View (spheres, rainbow, N blue to C red):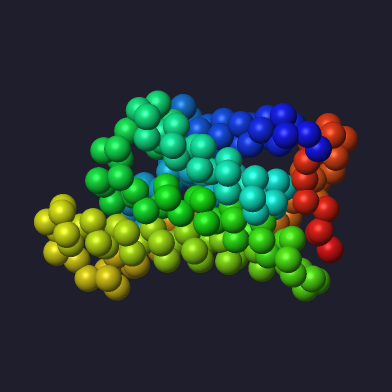
Length: 196
């Protein structure tokens, strides 16, 4: 696969991340009430995982780096059509940054291990990293500069509905991977063939 083809595939995932971040903005009925709060059905972790699975750990992570950097310039590609450095001052900045290691870890497990069901291990590991990084950042932001007194446990409890949603989407990513990889193959787009 040429460098141009890899760049094109990476750009495609930047676009998918933008759509995934704002799907509940354009389709409000996809914000689901769970446990007294509304959980928007963001597809960002889903697409970050697929980027790693399909493009591999290097180009998957590269596509997520591009997404984050473009958002930092002020382009409205983050959730709620936001962008700029100010987003990282909020409690969700860590989740945005975590998309880079999500794609890297998912791709690395697929490329460098030989376990039978590694696609499921890859997506579960990616989601765990997503929440370890994201919730810790959220807790730190609230404690250090947002002036919110919250315990680390309470921060985790508040994210349970979101974790359940993203875990389910991670499993869907693993299930869709063979079919999507086949589509990439037919389109002559680079992909990771190590699914078993």
